[in-house]
Image (cartoon, rainbow over all chains, first blue to last red; front, side, top):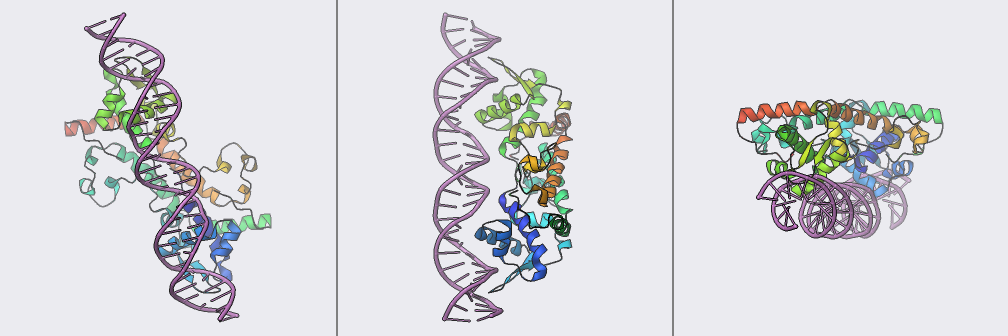
Length: 157
Length: 157
DNA sequence: ATAATTCCTAGTAATTTACTCCGATTTAAT
DNA sequence: ATTAAATCGGAGTAAATTACTAGGAATTAT
């Protein structure tokens, strides 16, 4: 039931990237330093986000990453799904949308009671993450930065 | 981000227990048979629920388990928390309620942006599981049982 | 050329999960 | 009194997952 470091670090990293991208392409090294995340691990995470179409890259010296679309069009759900695969609390084949229950591959799904429980939990999570946009977090981040003056000590969570 | 078999099996087991408890104390063996769950594993799960005060037990031959309070007063949240420990997506010390941020043990929590994201996800999950009561699932279970006539093939999820 | 960077894959130690196993205790039934 | 059926309790373990590290190839500004 826990988000892994992939999701936690990755979201922080992308916020950091978004805050700094006006200065040009952002390298993993700079993010890793500011956010105190292992650089090689972070590379993997950002590449997952690239694969998902959230960031673009510039190779070679002076290169780095940038958002592939406006921060207002990237949801926390997009980010977490890129990093964690699917973020459902229970991946029940009977819940995959579109398909009729039986076709989805779960023999007993017609008589399954817990199915509705899992659906409610999954929907609640999806709703929460899909309605928070990256730009909100970037704005909040700038406010906190101004208040404290200094670059903040990053949190592990 | 996934619920483990503890939560999934355990909830199914407790629904099964609630459906059958009018016939007297329900043994782990009978639940295990109906739900196709390993008996010794199931014992552990039910004991966790007993420890949490959700079920009571009768020892000795002919013994078994019964609900410790009405099914209408047991939420899915109670059950999942008994089985999985805490069900937060992120266990962030800065989010423990009551405590002021800094006292909670996270140095950078004052400047932490992701904190609010984790809180929204955690709250969404809590709200979902705390508003589904066991008796609703028991009723639904009975309806499905009548419709199909036979005892259903249990689902792995 | 060189240095800085992204890209890609493989490996690995630690942790967690999903169990099993064994033995002790309690109690109904014979 | 024995036996069998059940809860209780803890220890052990194989498999999977997590959270990384390591090493190198490809690309590009200087």
